[in-house]
Image 1 (cartoon, protein in one colour):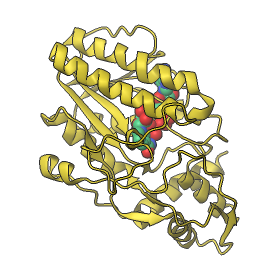
Image 2: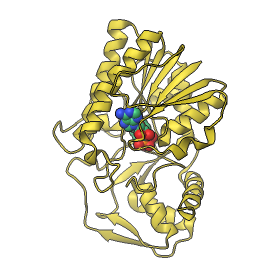
Image 3: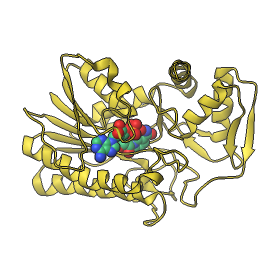
Image 4: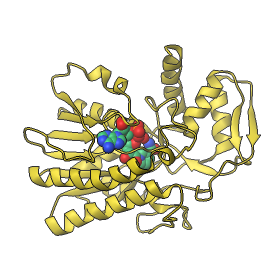
Length: 319
Ligand SMILES: NC(=O)c1ccc[n+]([C@@H]2O[C@H](COP(=O)([O-])OP(=O)(O)OC[C@H]3O[C@@H](n4cnc5c(N)ncnc54)[C@H](O)[C@@H]3O)[C@@H](O)[C@H]2O)c1
């Protein structure tokens, strides 16, 4: 297949390009570097089946030649308001890439008769009242909260994708991605795993907000990409959760990072910086992915952290 990946210079987009190329496909990457990094694609320079177009997908998209699939991954993804790359600091861009960017990429897929895959998110469930979250749960989202620029953009993107499927008969897929981590995450993106790893590598105590009992589930990037690739090849048009259902408290995560790095500085507890829509618990129900894709994660937290820490160590040393 000849496949367009938007958000190709980002964390997930770049891993997706690698996987698609490894499967023998031709890949066209597209990105405007809003939150991504050209370094994530540097290793693909000169690859005979990879090309790159620098473009903002909120503007009309033209791609010469045929396309068999369009994978729409462009969007800021970090909720951290202290990071310049967090979507609270990129509110209009986030809404536009979810709305106009999704509309443009759907239109492109339609023009090419290509299949379409939307990178959606567990944030469509908002601060959920149901645990773990199955795809049938409709969510609890504050439409005007600070996080709404992301949550509502993705909900709109899902609605637009289903409209193209129902009205135009477009061959669409929607993946609801739960927290994913791994090599190439921005060092300064403000999400908890990059923060903890850097603090641990610097020998500092890890900062835990609140009592550390809030839980998260973390999926290693290779597991996620495997699930997405299986979904792309499947016939499923309704959303599918892909994530790791193993639930850890933030405190357990901090202790694991410290153990893997060998950091003796421990943790410090800070007053919760939690905004009022930040979910206390988030955990995927992956029954559907298991059943229709035969997929489940295989890489445990400690193994995934080891691989991620090695990448962070290398990048921090070359800074
Ligand atoms: N990483 C996760 O845990 C996670 C969880 C749920 C959903 N997602 C979704 O997966 C996708 C990728 O996330 P990520 O973690 O790799 O984030 P990322 O910030 O590393 O990558 C996003 C990429 O999109 C690009 N981009 C943003 N706006 C653009 C525009 N208008 N035109 C062209 N390119 C644009 C950025 O420059 C960046 O390279 C996003 O859609 C995100 O919502 C990620």
